[in-house]
Length: 139
Image (tube, rainbow, N blue to C red; front, side, top):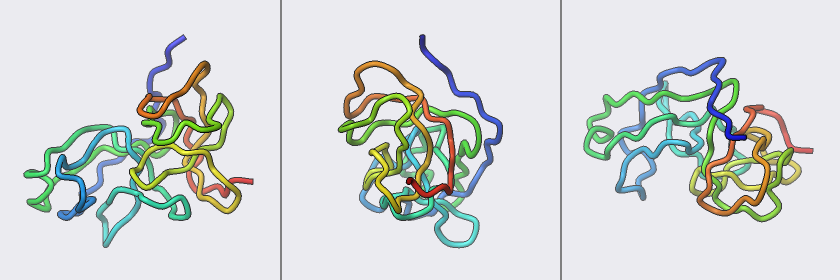
């Protein structure tokens, strides 16, 4: 059965004007983000960095460059998250964020973003449902 997002808390955050400087597309939805400077967010590109949540919308690079873009970020509840590397991700897996803000299996000492709720075969590029458990260290 397909699941939809069920947010307990979604908050708007200003997007860093140089958001993921290597991403010419701007902000891409269903990717994990981190706090940048002040009250801005940036793409989370390291499993050891605390993720603040998952972006829920696309914002083009031109708008991001103005420094005035605000993105909706799911922080509690469930959300879709793109799979970066599917190796070992199954329902119940603890996931963290890889170097493209997507889900990868969490190793010990990683800052996990959540727990995979999706069943069946999971491949890179798929969207999975994640129960957000931000800030926990994977066992």
